[in-house]
Amino acid sequence: MKKVIYSRIAVLLLFLLFAQACLAAPGKKCKPSGILKGKKPPHGKCNQENNSDCCKQGMRYTTYKCSPPVTRHTKAILTLNSFEKGGDGGAPAACDGKYHSDRTPVVALSTGWFNKGKRCHNKIKISANGHSVVAKVVDECDSTMGCDSDHDFQPPCPNNIVDASKAVWKALHVPESNQGWMDVVWSEV
Image 1 (cartoon, rainbow, N blue to C red):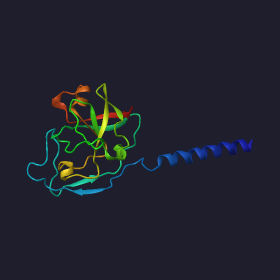
Image 2: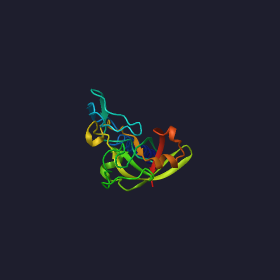
Image 3: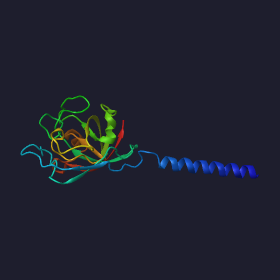
Image 4: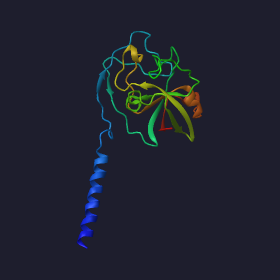
């Protein structure tokens, strides 16, 4: 009888230790990695096509090398971005070095979710307002750098961004006047 009780206690202790280790595993919490001091963009060099923010002189911007853990229903902020040449996305997409039509459902993910390009060309499902859309990952929304010409003189992205083309917003049935940012969930397909 004592052996059974000790065995159950041992199993319970092992389970509790395992649960604690899982909760404390690296990557479960995403903390800021630094601060970037903003510089004023040269006149006319920050494209505000989709109400994008431009860096402000002396403003302190938090940077991240990580993003929240990816789950089956990862919470994110959906933002609007143009992936076309001359659009507010700036340079060609990181995954293929090309520009993409705003009529194509494509996205850029925050640095941690982009995972050094490991999600390039993968499809993700984005859901909001009772609608869903599948989009292709083509770019990184850089959470580590910003306020320079490579980033169209825009601040670093927060660590929980899905930066989407107009096609994604349209598929989610969001009126153009309400496009810009909203809470969504996403998952890998």
